[in-house]
Length: 447
Image (cartoon, rainbow, N blue to C red; front, side, top):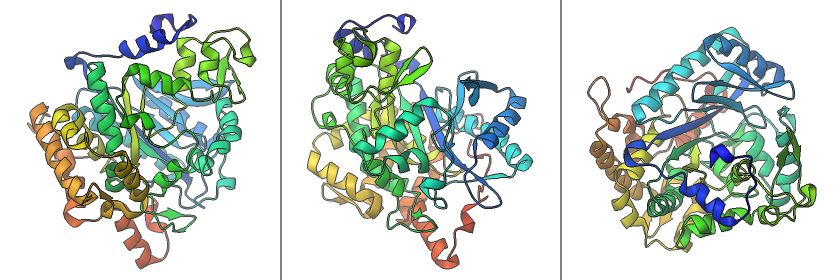
């Protein structure tokens, strides 16, 4: 269907077919990781502006990256199957290539972080592995020149009080997984959604707001819970298939429309209106697959579907721990799916949602179906280890993917998240200087 992306869609069945076309054979299953970071001025910890991100991109062209432009403005880079883009407040995002195993995912990130290290040495820019900008006020953050972000800045606050914080002040890790059938999609989709409270608790790494304690371990997650078009999709708790996902997706209002390289705002009309030829901006015109893909990318739920499943509930973390989340979920999603699904399938919606809303503040003490998150973490860690051993993806040193779970093992053993460790440091030092330039490892030696 991608080859016909410019042809008009006449009915809902074509959208269902779009997801059917995403089905992969078992040997084709891949893992893709997207990782966001904040970039700051070394001198005053203000967020970098357009001229500085342009400088970063130009340095990286020496590493084989090619510039990408929008309206004569540099907005990103590409190299093979990798992309570097920026979010609305110039958060820096590496969208990795799809890989067969975590060894390759980790190696990709390590290589790129070494490229970035050179950027930091040549410029007045630094970074911090934190998932919510702890230094800057929303109104002081420079804005990306991307046209769609201008529309989003205007539209998003209408449906969520912290939507602009989400756009400009958060950084996360996203993990992408393939599915082998509609039934396989349903199990992976449900597991990913039901485990959102666990991933929020386990990977909490954003306890600060404007140089003070926020009262949350993952303030990023609190922000996303109060974001327009965010949260956990209600259909996650129902029998779900491609048709139901399509029905849910097309009933979201269109956030922006791209026509002839211009972005338009459709004033609250839904994709369903567009499908029926009732969109006022383009009278009588029907959407294309590209329009549908753009629309899917503006649904900001914890888990969403494209032609693969995206898990989006993890706080970003430092270079040394970035492999842990992908390894943990890969063990569950690709290695121990049936056993994981058996555990979560009877969880009640009310229990999951209560845990989901409590997890940003309570972390590993959050209760779900009678157990604290730390107990669930032990159970699912064992299943993840089992799944990764079963996958038996070996690196050059003869080690499997379980080597990337050490960070999680320490968190569970000590009952202390990365956020809680940061809070302890803050209470000792009474400032946040320790957050800056504290990238313990620009490369990860685990592989």
